[in-house]
Image 1 (cartoon, rainbow over the protein chains, first blue to last red):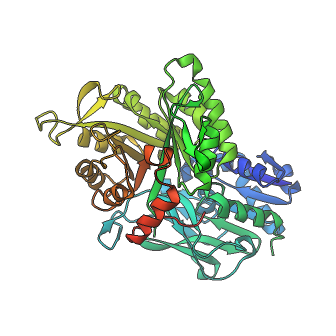
Image 2: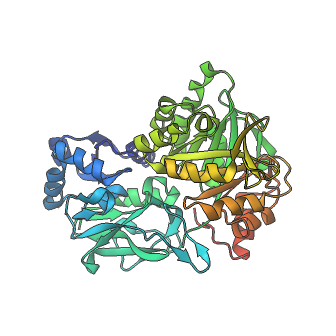
Length: 208
Length: 259
């Protein structure tokens, strides 16, 4: 059984629909016991870091996530869920969960690609340059694109956790991986077939 | 680098497509869920539904459509038309849409943009703008005016001012529809699109006038649009999304080619 962490932050229905489509059973919960009983945990999220962190602390889900990570269970972060597993976010000047050393930063005000001025948020389809292979990204074409929508990006302190980067005026870390944790800035649940494949791979992954 | 998005737009009235859509073998499809599935499978980057249901008591039919679409396609989609307040937004987003678009409701009550952005995040709130070219005046210095009710009512609001204002209020994206170009299939309003896109930081979707792939190439380069809305040119099978993307790729315009 897959558990989706329910913390009042956006796209939980979309993730649930995608899991239904790939035939996975899931539970949406904020109960630490149910999270601990699940085989896999998905930490999604859309919204602002400050509010999300306040809610997580109130429900003690920040410490629950630390325990889940330490337990070796496969954990997937999506979008805001990826940003707030770092130690700090520039969004709302928020202290975050700190599973991974580093911070979440805002895109610089002036971003460009050649002569083209780039918009913020980074909204739309973009690709990922993978630095190494990972079971969760098996069977994904190199040219595949994924749906992004964000104004902040994860900046882990340790280069070794960066699994993939994406170019948007700057090169930023779009996928990070450490032990049983895989976290991505884009939305696999909204990235068509390649996105569904990532979710399938995750559900089959043992976290090693 | 980011790809330019190609977005088919479907008009829905009381749960049915207002004009049939022709697919393979010229089969006429009236079901918006089935049409969305076909476009999803043919490489659409996003889908826009425009609910033109006149009577409010039939609006809940659209919510059911949204729910079924969300179970069927795994790309972002937005719903516009008839979204008047926070409660309407909540229904649409709760049913599984990524974005809601507000148009005349935002002209009447601009605060709905801020309220929506606060409740669901800016990325959920699209400002739909219907625009007509007018004489430059003190009221409309850009030479473009916001119109409502399908272009019948002039609001006296300058289009450029409104785009910037909506961005400040918290809109995450603008869907810019030229009433002059709409339905002509003669090409997008390039000057207007460039003007708006260069003066806001949020993405701009160009709408109105698409008739052939050259039009998309033009609006995505000279017009500086981040995305292009299309309707008749794919609904009547004159072109396919894959064909349009191939044309754009040959013109060195980056689009998503794997789906």
